[in-house]
Length: 627
Image (tube, rainbow, N blue to C red; front, side, top):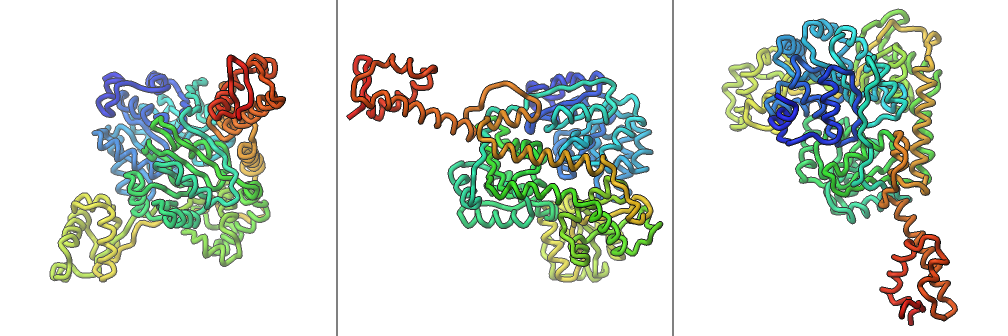
C-alpha cells in the first residue's frame, strides 16, 4: 500500500498535512531524519505510517509511560500490531513481547530509553528485523536541551547493533544549537532536518501582571469559556487551585505524578469528556493528550525554560480555533526563578553530603553496594538528615549523571493480590455481590498461585475479562480487601536508587563540566530567557518565542498583550494629536492631518471613532470639536 492508502485505511484521513509527507518519505528512503514539529503538528503519523509500510518492526523510544500505553491502545483499536515494554511488567511479560517482536508479530515496539541498557533487550534486538528506530522527545539526548536525560545517550550504542536501520528523531522544542547536537549524538550519516514553523497563528500569548494570582485566575476563566489547563509548580498547589476554582463555581480537578494510575486515568477521562472543565496540573500532565478543543492554558508559575513553556502552552487550540496561553507573573516570580538555579544545582559539597548520607541510610560500606537497588522513601530520608526534598532530588540527579548511582523518580510498580481465604472458604461465601463474584471468577481464570502468595495483576485486563472498567475493579478489590477476603496492594509509584558502581569515598567524587558546570550555565541561561520573555513589554510575544527557536522576521501577531497595548498607545497618541489640532475652535480640513502624521492610516480609525462618538464633527471635509 502507498503511504496515502495506509493513512486512509487506518486513520481515515485523505491527505498529510504540514511536513508529514516529507518526513515519511525521507525515513522511508532509509535516510536518518530529524523532524521539528510543534505540539499538535501530528508527530505520531510520521513514524506510524512508514512503520506499517516497511518490513520489520519499528522501535519507538519514548520516556513517557503514559504516552506509550495510550498510543499502543489506540493503535490496537485501529487493528495495528503494537506493543510496549515498561516498568512494572514481569520478566515473563517482557520476554513474551520481545519474542513476538522477533517473530514478526509486532509492527511498532515502544520502549523507554532506560530499557536500552537491558541485557535481555539488547540480546533479543539482535534477532529482530528492525525497519527503523524512532526517537521521540529527541531533545532529551542533548546536554544543550532543557530536559537532558542521560539514558538517551544509550541510543547511539544500539545503532552499532543495527547498522542498517535509519533513525527518525522527533521533537517539538529545539533551538538551533540543540538541532545540531541531536544529529551529532545520534550519529546521523548526514545532516537532514525538516522544519515546520513553530508559529501558531490561532494561539494568543499573554503575560498578565498579577499581584493576586488567585483572583486573576478566576477572572480569566470566567471570561474565556471552554476547556482549560492550569499549570502549577507543586502537587500541593494542584489541589489548592482546584478547590479554589470549584468554590468559585468552576468545575476543576487536580492531576500530578503522585496519584495512582487508576485515579489519574479517571480524572483525565472526566476532563477529556468535558465532565470537568479545568485540569489543574503539574507538568506531569499533557504529553500525548489528544484533546484538540482546549481554549485556554494558564501558567500560575513560570516554567524554567521557554522550551517547556512553549510545549505546555501549545496544548491549547490544536483544533486551529482561537485559543489563549496566559502566564501570570509578578515581581516575586523573578526571585523564585533565580532560586531554581541553586535548587537544581546545589553546591558540590552538598551533593557529597547527600551521597554519604545515602550510604548511612542503606548501610553501604565504602567499596561495596555495586548494583544494589533500594526503594527510596524521600520524605523519611529528608526528615532523618534534615534536608529539603527539592535539593536532595537535584543532588541525586547530578549523582546519576556522574554515573555513581541511578535514581529513578517514582517508578510505577504493578498491583499485587493474594486471597486470604482458602479456595473452599471462598466458594462457601454468601456475602459477595454479583459484581464481586464476576471479578473473583475472572481473577481465578486469569491467574494461578493467588492462594499461596502475592501475584502481580493487571486491573485493566481483569476488568476486560469481567466486563467492567479498571476503576470498578479497583473499587471492588478495595472493598474485598477491607473485608479480609483478599490482600490487595494497588499500583504505586515509588522512587528507587541503584548503585551504578561501588560506593566511593565522597572526597573522590568528581563532577565534570558536562554533568555540572556546563549544565548549570545553560540552565541559568534558560531561566534568564524566561524572565526576559515575561518582562519584555516592547516586542510581540509570538515573535519573542519564535526568535528563541531561531525563526526571525515575520509580522507581529496583533493579538498578544504587547500588540494590544501598542495599538492602544498609538490610539491614545492619535486622539491627542487630533484633539490638539482642534483646540483652537476653528475648522480644519482633514488634509491637515496628513501634515501632522507621517502614517495617516493610523489616525483614520481613531478619527472614525471620534466621529461616531460625536466628539468631532465633519462638514464638507472640515473638522471641528463636537458640541
